[in-house]
Amino acid sequence: MTAPPLWIVEDDAHIADMLDNYLQAQGFATRVFGNGQQALSCLQADPSSAQLLLLDVMLPGLDGMQVCRQLRAFSAVPVIMLTARIDEIDRLLGLELGADDYICKPFSPREVVARIKALLRRASPSTLLTAPGASALAGFAVDEAGQRGLYQGQSLKLTPVEFRLFNTLMGRPGHVFSRARLLDGLHDDWRDVSDRAIDTHIKNLRRKMEQVQAQAAEGVGISSVYGVGYRLDVPAPGGQRMGPSAWALQPAGSPAP
Image (cartoon, rainbow, N blue to C red):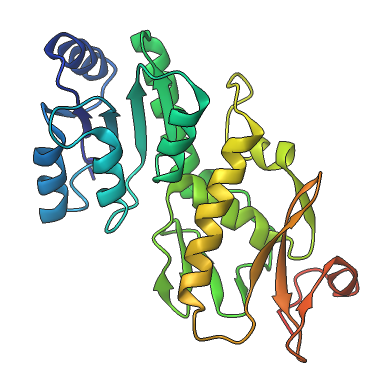
């Protein structure tokens, strides 16, 4: 089965043509859009029609940030932002809105292809790192084949980055993962990523998990461990969340109590 095309959403005709020609030469099918509203409308009509979006930030009318925000209401398609805004606030805003990666202009086509392959590789079920026997927990489940996080059978609509974080945390509930360890599972060694990027992705993942558990008195939660990283906590029979000491007593692969 042929993969859907990569979408290039870029109003600069020179950049769009350069990316289009280079990506096709690398064996990718592509589709080019000159504005964000057109791309968003096409995705709303068929959310599975794009394999990945290269999305420029500075688009006329509906800019890339607005496109990404609206897109995440109905689709988890991977998004790489193309931006000339190199300060950290703009990069983190893009991640908080649901972007999976960003590339600063000017860039080389080779870098773009490397980032695309890395993101698609992370999104591939065959490359996911999951602990055996830890696929379901207190209503949450990992669907490796579909690359989805589920709650009571319903999709959490996670982005590829959020899914890998969810998958890692679900694999060892109660274990404290450092930011460095979480970064290792998300990005290739050559990429320089700040710890704050992990904080932003965790914030988005935590929000999605809390939203689906809105009616639960005490549910699964992601706890921040000051100065270290993050931990997945699960409610014990009495309603209190189980921390690392309780989970340490559970046999490997044990279901949630």
